[in-house]
Image 1 (cartoon, rainbow, N blue to C red):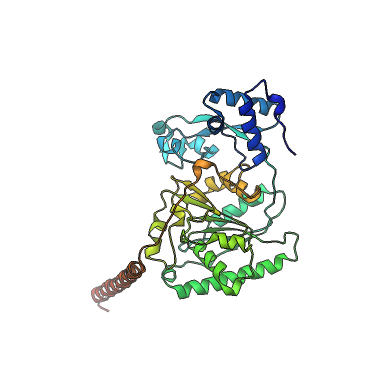
Image 2: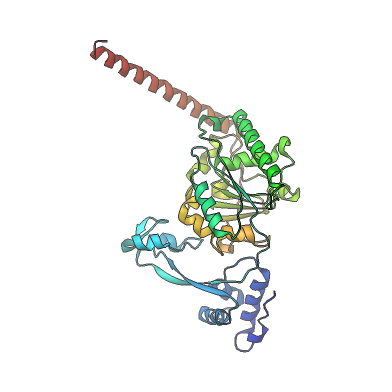
Length: 384
């Protein structure tokens, strides 16, 4: 249903009405930011006038509005994305994003949040989630719980756990084995989904090393028949040069969102340890086909913390918009981080992996030697 705002012309600035009308019709984001709207109108229209118009639309039930509490610290105030404080944080008087008490950061301030009646173009039919290399992915259960609570229907979620991988990340041969296991598991799940009410390509959320395995799955000839819905990459160690446009053009995936973090250290050094990897979780992807959304406060797994999962999946949240809204621009303009990246020389990456492996091997030998010496000393002291 198209919302016609022409009746407000005369009572409100015509250009202001036109800008809000275009945002409602574009349906690219559920958020209506008064400051961004004012910039699009003209300097002659104040933010207060924009807010007055939006409040009129709220009163006429044409848009939504709610009040949110925001941390007053300088770090959170300068963040590109809005992170509303949860009831738990307000009760504890501490922000989990900047890790500051309200006594130091200042009392939280209230902000009016305006939302459109954005239509949903698709539902979440079912989903696959894959974790990183040094964890069994406890966030997957949190995500599953939030998805289940969010939807009015049951959306199956395949939680793929390949176990702890430490040394295996250094070797392409191990990558290939893990990709084969992942592909077989997904193939089986897709086949089973054909006999359910939720048949269709699954949406995918991948984290860290799991994102690299998924990218290699897309390039594998053994699984070229697999197709996916929308893909969310978090803390991704995929190369920013990965050709997502080709995957989208060939209908392998529908759309891609890269949620990157400004404090994600592991992905920045990944190329020196993990073959074929790169810092997409920090820089985003070079491809214009990808929605690159950057939060400079996020570290490697911040987006997967319970508080942030809930915020991103709530109505109007970033992931909610990406998973359910029409294909287009899902983030706010000031959230996007564009990049052009190239890996360091291949010989440098190869030498760095050799040095890391040599260090690990030396550490294991040292631990074995110390343990043996302690055992012999203990044995001698006991007279055994």
